[in-house]
Length: 345
Image (cartoon, one colour):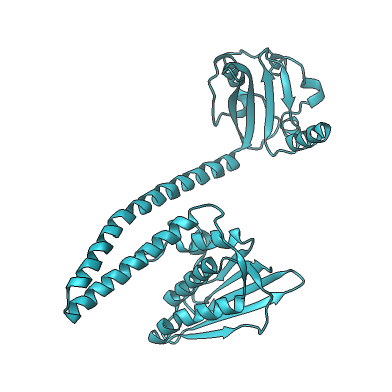
């Protein structure tokens, strides 16, 4: 069992897309993976157990950041690779150094990771996005307290006021407060990575319900909904509430892009061979250009005056959490087609 674990750990270590070197307290090389061998030209068997100073041709230890980390415990980020080890590759990499400490907190070694510069930027961008969402989630959560107080006073006024016109205004306020609370709940649920409560459900019923929800709005705006679904598509295992939110987001985006007498096509088909259900939502609207398409799923990106820029971002997250995919095809004046695929139950 232990030998098997060691074998797999070695495989993982040597297949990492990062260059890794580890030196011990005496400055000898203890780990050196395949990726770093390729980047530097040094073979693992030639450097393991050898002094790191020999590897860098006895370079001044005050210049080498890995040796500085070993000596002082200070860690460095986003360095040029030559501040740790010379590379023979023109690929753009950055180096980070880390102190290795024992249980007492004493430095017993040091490690350097060589990371592709593009990947480093991707990681930094992901952290920034996560921080933005965390801050936004906290702000939205704080909104609940005043909303709860306002809702309570509205209910008290509803009990005391008897004039129909005034009651009508209070009813509208109450309904809008409830809707706002639901939006807050939806956002906070989606802010939890992987949150999804799945049960077996019929995609037919889900799409029929969604079409019924938007039918009144479509009629008022003189838009036509064409629902084309098979009689008996394979069932899916999904959180129907979350998927309903996805389809409503997509359809309402289509409504915003449709002219008077525009058409929306809502289609569904099953592919038993691939084990998927495919939902296609196509409109005859104004379409989108390449720039909008490229930013469609980014958080906080919106083309709407009062939009939050979270609708399609959250929709993609929901579909990803269901093991599915979402694809958008569009061009200016050519309409938009959104294809959602979901695995069957």
